[in-house]
Length: 481
Image 1 (tube, rainbow, N blue to C red):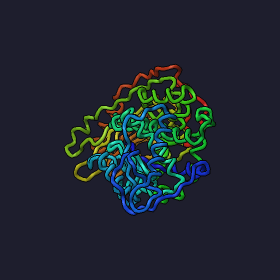
Image 2: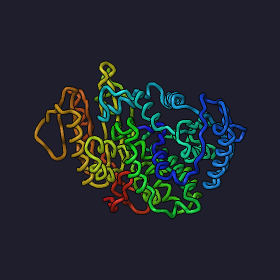
Image 3: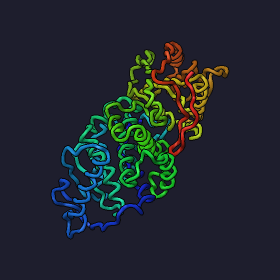
Image 4: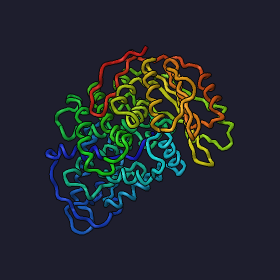
């Protein structure tokens, strides 16, 4: 699942808990959006009459920017601009950001992918939902394209310092590492993109918390991941769109903050902000590194899973390849978590080693075809996911009619949209769904013909931990066999 626009629900929840430590200030009641200004150039949004930003906000933003530079060790290399916006204006800005990040074709691909995996219903309107979903939680944001800090005028006064400390940390990241280039370096690998987003958001959340607890050091604190998860879960009821969103949307939107901050804290414990800054030059490559930071510290190099296009599908005139991508441990977690249960997701996702999927679309009727391949740390994990995949297919297609005698290593069935099949082979699970009936046998033969990968995990030890939920502590280690 591709990285989404940022959501600041985490900051809102943190403000509810830590508000007592944040200085109270008076909020100006500005009526219109101000033109972009430069922090330090003589404007702010508080303490003045009319629409002109007051010097109070300018001084506060400038002071917080300097504080975040001192905390993180990232130098201020250029000026930061800001705009004070209303909720409606923020909605328009988020819409513009969405349009700049995704082309209409990319929106279509994401929409088709979500429906193919059974995560949203057929009548789901992705673009409309994303605007509502992220606008509801917006509390101000930094835009690396325009180098502008957008300040939400509707949030409580006590929250502004927290939002500014988090978002101005993004400004420092941008000035020192180039956020646009960093975040979108792997647009064809959702898992790698999600890992980079978690690093960026986790770093900023850690910096924000460090400012609050100073002079204590975050690296010496108790596990903030164990704190943030339950705390955030208790806040969602005040956000109707968020609380009613599918599980995978909710989990993926919180993951960069909760798991990312937990990862950042682990790095801080080992080498402080200098080592955390160095991770931008050697970033985590998969979300597994955030479920289990030890995988990153041991520099585990996971196997690369490839999946060529089946010739039986390439020859179909009306079928075109829409997407080729990777779910990652996070993707497996949210799919299993939504279609089965989060308890099952915690159990099986930790065994993920690699995957690749192909998404096709019929240009005439819009039907999708999905072909996937997953690799697991042991045959027992693969067997567990094989059972999960069969259960998920039965849930997605209630009218499935099994074909042939039941087997422990193959599930083969038919429905109105075509053939579905799941194949268990050692540490692999391969599957296909929405296959035209006259191509079913050829696709099954293709899946069986794929050479089994050689699993060699480079690094200091080859262990993975059961995937903890947000706010959970990692469980016992499981050796790769």
